[in-house]
Length: 403
Image (cartoon, helix red, strand yellow):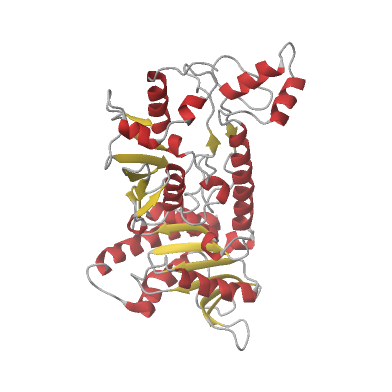
């Protein structure tokens, strides 16, 4: 099959590029033209595009007489489907001006997909995404860091894949799934359930009062599965999704360590005692998440500091999509993340963006900082959420008399 041949050639080509990158990085700046010749054009060719046919690969392409040129336009039926803007090896692609430049070219030409590359890192943008420029980034991969993951993502830019609109279908499916996942997760977050959800489940159950339903929903953690349906071109069907929406090379992250592996497409869910299952599947858990009490909500991070549970200067740890970031506790109850003094929730949101990239949707950025950040338990030394430490402190305090 031609698709299998192209995919295998792409993997071999990326391995060769990774070997070259290892040699070039020893203090050598090879410039943009050499980057194109030795690192970029071999990839374009391995993706099934004929780099010698101007009707497929047009260099220094101009959409109109007064338009600025783009380094490569990849064409189907003589119409541009993908723009590739090249920079010299070592150039920092995170500078917004590079993306703004090529996205403006694409918008003028009516081209949806854009790739920005320095020969190692490849950034893929959806120019038509209805979001600001810094959120149009769809995928980012590094050949030197992960040739296999890069092959899986870059295969979406293959000639056959672009002809079949696979990347458009995948982007739309992930966009829809992300919106649904966020909305459904919010319905089962352990807080007071939405009145309309309580009413819906109450109508579908027998012998349960609305109070029973509400209490059960608070205990419920539901599993919502969005199976990956778009394997990389030429590969066998697989259950995992593509590499995460944005996984920049480790060097580009400024506030923590650890690359992001492929994300799960499941919102995990557990319940305590049997709860209504008409809305979502649920599994039993030995420990049900307790509802946050008013006593807990009244406690601040400074209260944990005063109690000696966490100390100023101590390290908090947060995990997201397989990536890990750290923050420092400050005496005033804020935390230092990436040089900024932020609240727990704002720091958690910033950590998510640092891991997933600027294209992370706003709904996914919303963060309960108490649940996101973890600190060593003073007794066991194990990492536990600040929410659990706050709960332990609340339980240890004298109970306030009822009014």
